Structures are given as structure tokens and as C-alpha cells.
Image (cartoon, rainbow, N blue to C red):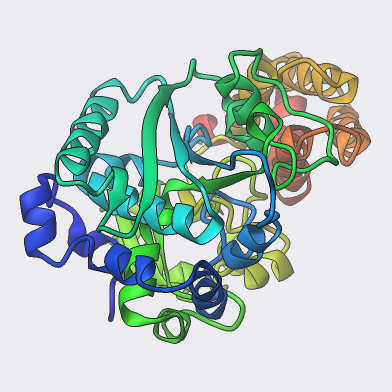
Length: 418
């Protein structure tokens, strides 16, 4: 099985990275016309690894080439989705892979200034990245006249302040500008009006980390690793009740069941599986009979859930679904930026009802009330946070209704009572 990203882990120093073939992809890209680089990325079927899964080459092509204004690259390293830790490993163990990817993306779109918007809690990792950037400048891979081509690129690290909503691209841009991290109304879209009112590309860390291999081995090779419309491999952050939690790189289209049982070792203490949250806390949960599904964007959507960021959270039979409901609703109530009334009020009320259930004061009809509130939020806000909060709540209330109703009726957790 061909792996794209994890073989670079451990090559933190630029000497080690270059000895293994690092920066060859960037050199090749800069020997090509920018339009040729974009076409190669389109051939690769690389889709954004931040959660939305939008085709990367297509996203770049939206940026006007003849703009008189500066263009910017914003690299999303905020990684605030609960259960997600893939970008942390890339930044910590292979920072030059990201830097090389940033060079390729910037050349393709005509960008001379790039920012890494990194999660504020990643303090030590930010230092590792800054050191790698210094090494790249010293070698002439950043700055002026990169590889003697006349192309220049400056790369800066900007530390966020811990807001989940800043993972949304327009909120990230607002925060970078020194404003409150709140999403913008769209249109206009960042491709034409982004950072400082200029054309902007926002890409995830993992997305850019795939570019060196695409440039070196070709878009068709990368596409062949995955499935139709979803090329390459994907990093999956597996946590929860498994024997071997960790980060796994698998081809797009691999089986969710295989990831859990063949790679992550199955359920701890050989207990029964109760549910799987397959793409971070915002993705609807799957029951055990639903995990025979391929890990790609389209297959997961057909299964009624999302691949999202690839954060796979596994729950065994000891998990109390009322507590899961409480944790999810409390998180989104806390992280709502408050700009949109349906999200601000909806997440708050869902958290209150979930708390009422878990504290033994649940009422008949609470589950239907939760679903009604969730549905009333969806599609009514500027950013997807309301939908991200609503979808898992609806799925849990529907798929685990019997357990939740017993929790309400008996005023205590049926799982703990067993």
C-alpha cells in the first residue's frame, strides 16, 4: 500500500527531509507553468482534508489570475474539531512537508504571502514549525528568488486564540485581520474577496501536505490510490474505546470496519461496539450494523453521515448516550460565536435540555424537542456551526431513542445501572 504522508514523519530537520527527497516536488512545480500545476492537482482528485471535501484544484481555479491586488494563502491549522489530531502530527513530525506544499500552492495561484493560522494550544508545535520555516529561509526555499525562478514567497505563523469557529475559513480570515473571529456572509467568497479584501485561498494542513507527492509522481498516480472523485490517502485519527488508538493513513475508500478492527485492534476488553462517530463530533453517529461503509466523502454521505476531518471516535457498550449528547451540545453551545440567533439560542437550549436529561430531570417529549430545535437551526446561519451541532443531536436522538427514553423515565443511566 502506497502511503503519502506518514513516511515523512520523523524527518523534522531540513537535512533529513531533503535526504529523503524533500523539496523535489516543489522544484518540479516551479519548473512548470502555474496552470499546469493546477491541472495536475485537478487530475489527482485531491479534495480538501479540512472536512468539506471541496476539490482543491477547482478551488484554486476560482482565484482571478489577472487581479491587480495581492493574493494570499491562509493555511488552516486551527484543528478545533473534537477528536481530530492529524494536523498536529504533520506539523510536529513533518513540518517541511507543509512548507513545500505551501510553496507549490502559492506558485500555482500566484501568491507571494502565506499565513499558517495555528491553534493557540499548539504552542510547542508552533515553535517547531517556526524553526522549520527559518531553515527553509536559510536554504533559499522561502523568501526571494526561490530555486532561481524569480518567484518569491514569505510564510508567517499566526497563533489563534482557541475558538472552534475560527476553523471556518471566513472566521479564520477575520481573526487574521485582528478582528473578532466571526464568519462572514457569503458571497463574496474568499477567492475574490478574502484576507484584507484580496483574493485568498484557504487550505487545510493535510491538503497541502499531499502536494509534494502529487507533483513528483503525478496526479493520475495520486488519483489511483483512492476512489472515483476522492483521490489519494487520508489520515484517520482514531480515539475512544479501541485497543490501539492513534493516527492511521489509509487509501480513500478503505472500510470503516477494517480501520476499527484490523488497524485499531478492535474494541477494548473485547466489549461490544455501540457506535462510531466517523468524522469528528459534528458527524452523525453510526450504529454497529452501519459501519460496513467506505471511507470517502460520497460513500459516507450516502450512509447519512460525513467523513469530515477523519476523526473516528469509537464508543463501546459502556458509553452512556445521554452523556455523549450532553458533551456534544455543551461544546457547541460554548463555541457558538453568537452572531446568528438560531445558532446562539439553539445550541444553548439543546445544552440545557441535555443537561436536564443527564441530571435526572428529563421530561417526556425532551427528545422530540431536541430534534425540533436542531432542525429549526439547520440552514439558517452564516456558517455551518449550527448544522454541525444539529446533525449529531438528531442522529443520537433517533438511533438511541430507547436508551434515552429509559434514562428519562428512570431518572438515571440504564448503562451504569447494568
